[in-house]
Length: 336
Image (cartoon, rainbow, N blue to C red):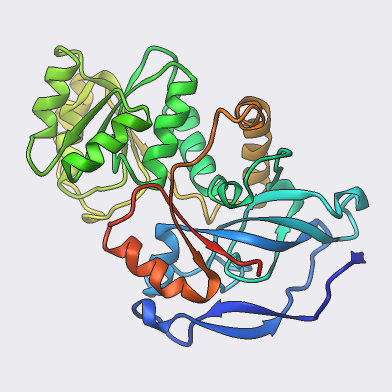
C-alpha cells in the first residue's frame, strides 16, 4: 500500500447518540484502514442526503461492515491504495459513492465505486453527483426501463433526486412532470428543465397529470413519498406503467386496488441502494461511466446546488434539509 497521509488522525462528524441535528459534533478520530480493493480519499467535499438524516435520527442503521459515520458521497483526491489497486490511482481526483464515512477528512472506498472528476469540473459539484446519480440511474433506467419518448412523474421535483432525474431524462429524451410544494419551487423546476411542474398544495396532481398529458398519463412514477400517494400515483400511470418506490416519507404502508394492477398490467417495484453489495455498485458505476459520464465530461450534466456549509456546520446543513427549505443539493466542504 502506498500512503501519503500527513496525519494518522482526522476531523470527522460524529454523534454519541441518535437525535436531532444538535447531536452532530466534530471530533478527532483515526484515519480508516484500507481493505485490499479500496482507495483512501482525502475528502474535498461531501454531499448531504436524506439517508444521512434518517441515520442520525436512529432510523436507518448502516449495513454490516459499513462505516458508522455519516456521508454517502464525496469528492477528493486519492492518497493511498490497497494492495489490489493500481498505484496510478494515487493523485487522481475522483468522486465516489461511499458506504458511509463521507463526513470526514478521509474516507476508504472500494475503487469500483469511484468515478474520475473531469479536468475543470467543480469539486463541490462533483461531491453532489454520486448518490443521486446512482439512485436515479438504477431506479429509472434499470428497474423502470425508461426510454426515449416516455413521460415520468417525479415527486420532490427540486430535491437532489428530483433535479437529477429531470437532468437525466432531458439528456435521454424523456418528458418530466414534477410536483413541488410552492409556485416558486415549480418555477425553479421548470427553469431546471422539467417539462411540467405541479404545486401539490394548490392542485390535485392526479387531475393535473391527466390534463397535462391530454389523458395519456405517464409511463413511470418515481416516488419518494409512499403512504397514501401510492394509490394516487397508480391513477397517474398509463396502462403497462411502472411505479418505482425509493423512499417512504409519508409511510411504508399503502392501500391499493390489486384489481387495477391486474387489469391495467401495472408494475410496482422499488429499491434501496445502500445495502447493495460493492459488486452491484461497481456494475452500476461501469454503466454510468459508459452511458452518463460523457455528459459529465462535456459539462452537460451538473447538479442543482443549494448551499455549501463547512464541515463544522453539519448540524445547520441537516436542519436546512429537514425543513425542506432547500432546492437542489446541500454539500459540506471538508477541505480547509
